[in-house]
Image (tube, rainbow, N blue to C red; front, top):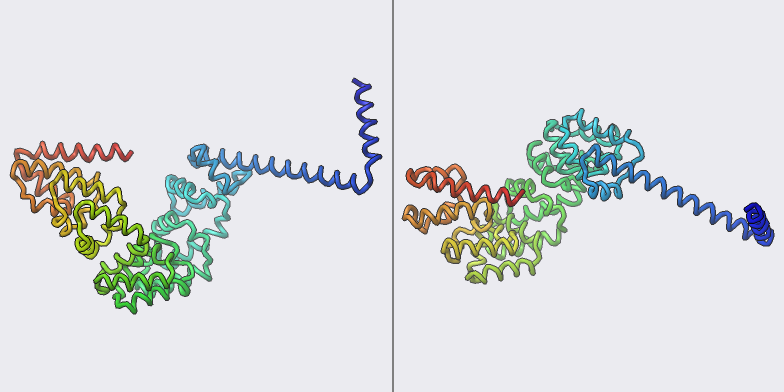
Amino acid sequence: MSRFLSRAVSFRRRIINATSPSTFQYLLCVQSQWFSVRYANSIASDGRSFTASYLIDTCGFSPKQAEAASMRVSFETRKRPDLVINFLKSHGFSRPLILRLIRKAPWFLRSDPEKTFLPRIEFFKSRGVSSSHISKLIFNCPNIMRRSLSNQLIPSFDFFRDLFQSDENVIKALEHCSGIFSGTRTSAAPKIEILREAGVPQSNIIKYLQFYSRTFTSSRPGRIKKIVEEVKELGFDPLKLQFLVAVHVCLCLKKSTLAKKADVYKKWGFSDHDILTVFRKHPLCMAISVDKIDAAMDFFVNKLGCDSSTLSKYPAVITLSLEKRIVPRGVVIQVLLSKGLVKKKTLLRILKLTEKDFLRRFVLCHEHEASELLELYQSKLDLTRKMNR
């Protein structure tokens, strides 16, 4: 063994002596870089391993979720993430909400809460926003904690406060989309002006921005102007809220997608005129999926015996939940029809009633059948709940 080692050392010396100084320095540099990379990778690997363990043990992540999150955020000690969690607790966040927020935005755990979160939270409080509203706002729009206070949050809040005339309305819009607080004067203002020039009342613009702000802020002004003109040509009245709902649907969907949905309606007997009538009455009937349209129409036509002309008068029912509203009430209606307790022409109106009114007027009022109808109705609802678990 000693002879082998002495030979190896001698061979290594001959190699070094035979190598020019410049070449030898190059080999040492390459070797040094290789060890640096190995060390850095080892540290990164250890960091990701610690991060994944923390996310699993402290935040309730699954191993798969933790692995995915640790590719976007990593830390080697629990000091910073613990600081973030304790900060959120001290500002009214419940533990379940904190864990859901971290799953949604793992980058929170790398933030400096006093420097990043506190100034923004204090700003919203100074504008009269309650702690419960702030926690809801941050959960719905985590990226709002990355927005610049001076360049985005303050001027944007002021802009929408003037438009909406109340802090509450501003918060309602924010809960749907924090994007409205990004580049407001250069982005939202010209788009709002397009709606005003089209004759849309200020009150409707406010409602639209509160519920459809995400679509509005993500669309280019040129596209919005084009869609507004097309919706006008379809016969929508800019003075009515349905005009803006139609604009929203057309902004969300490509023309090819709208054409596919129109084809499904045609399959069930709708003419081009029927489809236009339905769209004018309830634009959201084109916002639901092709499968949803097909399934709802199948139930209405084949189970309840409705035709396209009847459905075109009540298009809103097509957009109702098949599992939670249409099918449970549909089976009750079928029983009532078979016993002559309701008229067929009232079918679709029944679907539009509130839960309380439906039970009062079409279940509990029938003394002899009430228990049977209620049990049937409840069984369908229970089945839906089990399927959605």
